[in-house]
Image 1 (cartoon, one colour):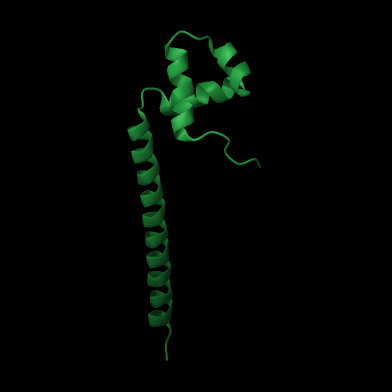
Image 2 (cartoon, rainbow, N blue to C red):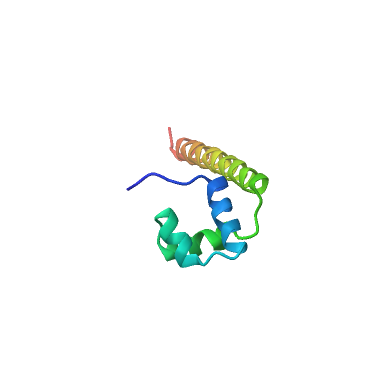
Length: 88
């Protein structure tokens, strides 16, 4: 799978060009992306500013970290329940 070619800031700038009146087909040709990618970006980053995109990225990273913490705690609880349930 390919890595990301465009940062969130670059994506927002591409979408701003579209808002300025450039046709999506022309933008796709200019940046070498498919129209499906363009519309996916528009759905995700439609009315965002660069600072909003940075904040979104930070929140996604924090959310990922918290999910890992919860998963680790759930495993610990499950192991403790198994240990406590055994008859010695």
